[in-house]
Amino acid sequence: MAESYKLLGSGALGATATTLYTVPAATQAIIKLITLKSAADGQTAVVDAGASAPVIGNCLLNNGEWADWEGSLTLGAAGVVRGLATTASQVTAAVFGLEIT
Image (cartoon, rainbow, N blue to C red):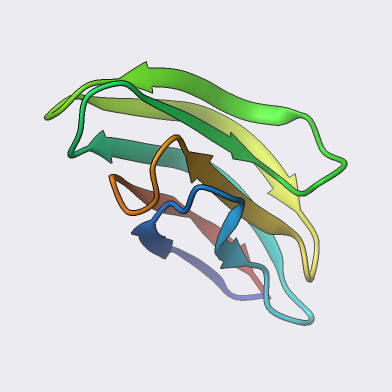
């Protein structure tokens, strides 16, 4: 069983749900940290683990502000972390965690 803590995914959030990370086949993931940074005022950012999953984090960010979510979220193969913001491409996100194969 191999374990690797790393940057799992990153990107700019869209105005609709944008997938930041998808767990590969035959793999489990433990999400430990999600960071958000805003490039515009008045951005509401929401991060979840899929359409029918509860919200992981929800925050209001202004230009230059950032927010972190720290915890433990376990996902199986094909599980996702996704996010959205008020305005597309104004909030960037990074997902860090452990992959177990």
